Image 1 (cartoon, rainbow, N blue to C red):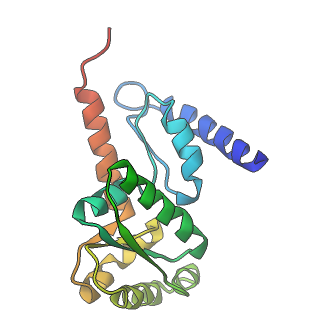
Image 2 (cartoon, rainbow, N blue to C red; image 1 turned 135 degrees about the vertical axis):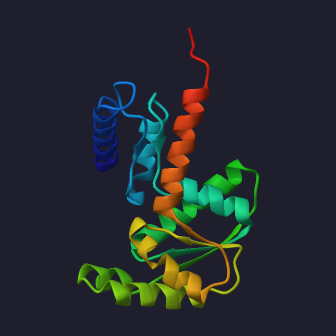
Length: 185
């Protein structure tokens, strides 16, 4: 429990620091955290921040939920699978939607990437994705998996959702909505 509180305090500090950074209006326009392992800490600061804050998978999950109820989630870091799947189910419940999630671990892909073999990484991810069966969308669940998108698209005939692109587009939408809101006063 102490580690969770410490993580939340660290994210509060990072959010305050980033919020005070230079942007168009003298502060950051938005904050995108990129590690899915810290979802609860990010949510804790998100609620209290006047600066738009986005979890790394939030926008990708929104897009996938818009695509349908039969979703495939592919991860290369196995310990993240349960957390990501839980987050996806929670978002579906918040929408009043029932979903089926097939989560698959691309064993060896992250190790290949760590040793500098990006081609092997992409090949492993694409092979695993091709065996996932039919889905309304395939979510590449970590930022590091986005590089394999083209290889996965060659193997799968369903929409492929990556977290980095979705997150940047989602944060842009959040900033635009904020900018269009009338000022309280």
